[in-house]
Image 1 (cartoon, helix red, strand yellow):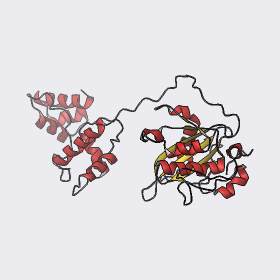
Image 2: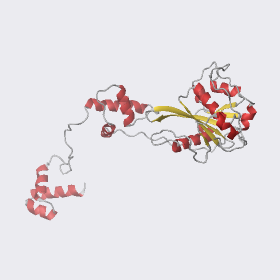
Image 3: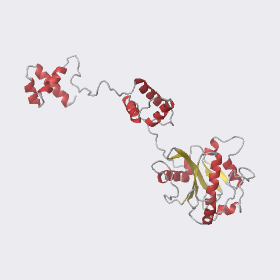
Image 4: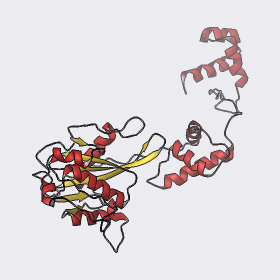
Length: 331
């Protein structure tokens, strides 16, 4: 019981005991109207008569229909059951748009409905704590001894145009090449990797995430793996759900999102960040080779005139491309 409620009970008790409302109001430093108001609310059968009542209107003309509120709560429960789904007002609005409703509520309206229903927020996942376990990794003492590659996306340009980014990092000199891809299909990845190698040089070993083999055919190797085999590159796939095995490129992915992405989420090319020598995807092999010392690859995947889709015709030997020159920057 707060102080104000105690004053209300005392005022009513004294008036009922015979004191005048004006005298009680003067001693309690309240108005006579205030004393009369709580005297009228006095109800000996209701112990909570002295509590403050809500001043909100009993009926709201623009309140959402009960059916819409029930639908929003049902969509939220369905999204909540999926641990990987987004459950905010924007995600609920997207699901409602699929139902082809005549009028869609505003995101703030959805938030008020969830708050009124007492829907709790989704608990945040605990942050990963490294165990300190040493993991074996191939040595990378010279340029192109080992490279790490990873695909991030989709990211979106203005107008909701999706694209993917293939990041390739040379561990020996910490040089990076970024390639913008229209999709993460196997062929697009192989062609992007080929363009990155035309600037970085061909590595002896390549560490990849498992996105290539997640949906790969059981009867043939992915085109990207065939490309590596054709060029004499040893491919190493890191284990599932262990991204720290590709820690260098994963760190650069985070740098890319922070430094290369603008407010709208679009990538800006030609920027170096965090001490990484960046090689943008707009550099052509003919202009990149004099700086890296690598020999250009004269055919791209699927180009007319190729004897097979994955066969790359090269000038020079793979060793010349692997050496990659002594420059610490790849473009």
